Length: 275
Ligand SMILES: [Zn+2]
Image 1 (spheres, rainbow, N blue to C red):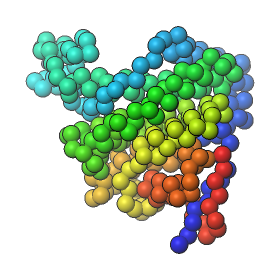
Image 2: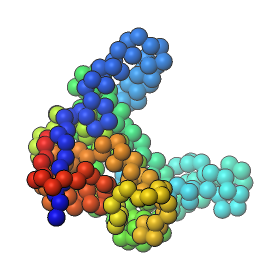
Image 3: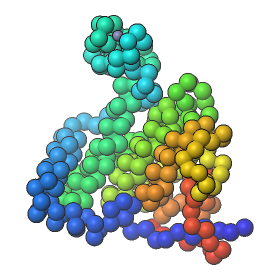
């Protein structure tokens, strides 16, 4: 039985390492377009520094439900419980619509965590650490309380997810969450790292992937997963060197995760984990 071997990871290093962050800082100082993008990032991050961050306690719903049944117009959110079609004027209410709005809030918080982490790394300003940490820890606190449920309300199916109603959406969101973790990992205690990794990333990123990659013709529909986009979403994580968890988990847990999540480098030597 072959065992798994991982390269050491230095935080930050998941998507951008220190050299790449240095290169970005030089571009910000010398290129107008880079400065413009940086200012936009900082404006977004500052919003979360000065606001009260609240994680929705409800799971998101599939946003394709968020449309008028008569004419297909995307609904406009009037309040959290009122959703209006601007074409025919019909107002929709109900959990399916309310939870679609919540999907947007979860997505925004994932984006915010990533932007806050980037703001910290690019400026060195420690004011960006607490809100990033809060988003990660607050999600870790409640992650497993979300039912593993799909958009049809069925539990434990191949399409089911925790925070979202599809695991494609969850995969994309987890890329931001994992990146945010990587960007502030050096400021987290061992206990905080373990809480985030064990109570969110490992189980949260679990996909029902019965086969190892690579597949010969990818992407393609899978009888086991039902939809090729699951592979795409999961692969997004894998391709982005998604694996902050490997620094804190046991070899067995990492191996279980790796076997269901992505195709790791295989080796006949003993597993080596680094943090
Ligand atoms: Zn309508």
